Length: 435
Image 1 (spheres, helix red, strand yellow):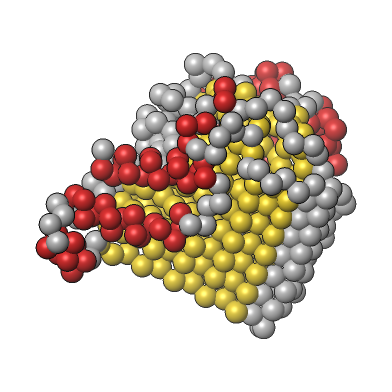
Image 2 (cartoon, rainbow, N blue to C red):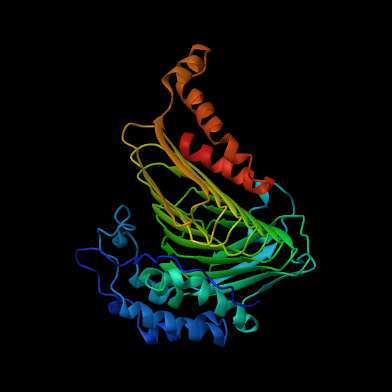
């Protein structure tokens, strides 16, 4: 796979802003990175990437508290220093024994993978792909010191590879288990879908009562005429924090359907990038988040249109109760060469209590002149008329509100093709809202 040229686009400096910055050199040293590399045992290509990322990290100031991308979710909510002792993570990929949520544990995965699918924890055979992913395709992260730190501090990793032309019909479940009683884990997951292949992967992040910072980076490359559905369910304990970065890279006529579900962690932030490099790419991105208690959920999606004749649609919904808070900061970025772009983003929020709060901040940056781009956002409470109607039919208030929430999420639930994933999401949403 060769390097795909990237049209020039403006790179936002994630560190700019006034105010004091924390001193990154206290958090991660070369000795820390070497120790992490030995524990993770990902192969020689990864060590070079780590060292380069560490050099960049140490040369950059950390984001100031009033920076545009960190104003609503302060950096001090995460245990950065704990990353130096991050835990190794075990990965297992397989078919579930049944399509239901009862097959959620690692033990119920089948050991045999479909023909044409491999899972490797050694990056040595993928040096050229890693060079692409963390070289030309990562120019937007060059000045992003948190991203550089997390790459340097990767505590585990795996590569999921789907061979050319393979059509995998049954969803694959990717499980992750933190091995040590550590306060952090930073896995690096790479998914390579070769030309004319198709696959569905469900990532279920459920670590029991584990309390710590979980900071995964997921890099997905979907090559020409390939397609993928990726479902990520984050349901960590309320004692944990989550800081994820998921990136999709689409080549000519490739397509992706991604569904991200945030149901856990006391503080959860996801940076989601979808990059369309060549004509014909199509991306449908759906997200569902839930706030209960004092949970803080932050969702930062960016649709990068770098080539003409591509389409992307992002649809994101969240329900919030108690004193929880959500932040949606979305971007559509269209390069000068990306004529005939068709891109949309929508964010809808449902407030279930007077003290819940949602911030919706959609953005457009368009440099082409022949495009269709739009965004929309709304924040509202449970409709009084709808609630009155249901209660007048004899339903208690809690049951009436539950029906309205189910209706609010119904269209998103219908986008999830995996029965296992639908069962998990439906059960956890209802448990957290109406336990």
